[in-house]
Image (cartoon, rainbow, N blue to C red; front, side, top):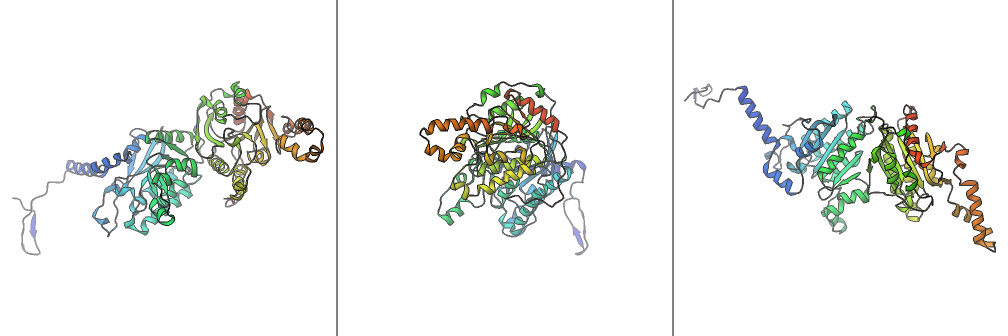
Length: 535
């Protein structure tokens, strides 16, 4: 047996097996073995798949261009002690972080790994997220978070909470500078729920994703209400009731594909223009279908999404918050190759009135588009704000003011198309000329007024109608007079509040020409720290 040396302290020979010589081949083998153990745990992966979920790395493979992912801090491990946590110190610490590309464009990503500590966030876990968030902001690249976490790691106490604070602070610092996308693919509980809430867009998958601040057990203990995880904070809840989820999908594959689609519509940062395609001749496009979609009768419903489909290239658009506040539609699309943000009242739902939720939904979308230089096209067919004590007591004035503020603040190119009716304060709020739209176009069916003819006549001529021998005949006469004087299509145009009354079939070409005209619009903002949005 060979020996490796003398124990000089005790004065006798130390007999030990000689270690293999250090060679590059051996070092590579050890590194590969360590890497393999860091990225895979067969039992944990089986448990993850039994829950109907993909692993963190499988998700990244679906999201990013093939072979583009570069991982950082693969070997990171927590340094915590006590409460048995020091007995288990896996590499990655439950989050896979790095950068890759989507359609060749750089993005930064992190994917929480539920197979390690349930994806819970500790100090090392948070530090990796902080790192990629800082790199995303420094390089002007979107950040995408794949959330699948049980929340703060209890064993690490306040250091876990401090880690969340660092994430939130960075999200706020990056807001309006780089796009932030959260994808919830499992639990996102407690403080973890605030990160998706601060993102620009949040995706959720039905059946596996949940978000809530306090879980079902706490809810039952405090209120006595028994509720399941999905009933409390599932994808349908946040996609249809709370409005926290921007997009809801049935499976991870379609969800991540839609994330890629969204990224293709967004600029990398606020200093770059949105990605544009070659023009497709929209400036000369005639679409007679517009006239058949929208009824002439002001109270007859139709689907505003059909109007959007005729307006945008190839009929393709990406609707945001499809299931929430459905009386307004917000979407991204392209007109002659250029990305636009579309806001339209939806006559199919509550006749397209504005209410609290619709105002919030549209205001947030308008502010995002303005922050990232995306032109706005507003399709108006609105009878007013939803009346009633429930709305007034819940603060419809304050929430409606959010949309008003968002449009007034927006400095991107803005085009208003009055498709049919536009009454009262809702007309003003829907990007009217008086609050700064650059170009106002109207169809011959437009009715811009304080209120509809029927309501106006009943208010103005209440006494005359009450005293008339034939109230119905007098009402019909007064309705015709009111409409002829105040509600005809050219009343607003004659006073400079509408730029042109266009044939509906020319809507796409008129909008395309308007966007081309406004492409180089620049409007400096006044020197101030920030405005005070009526939150």
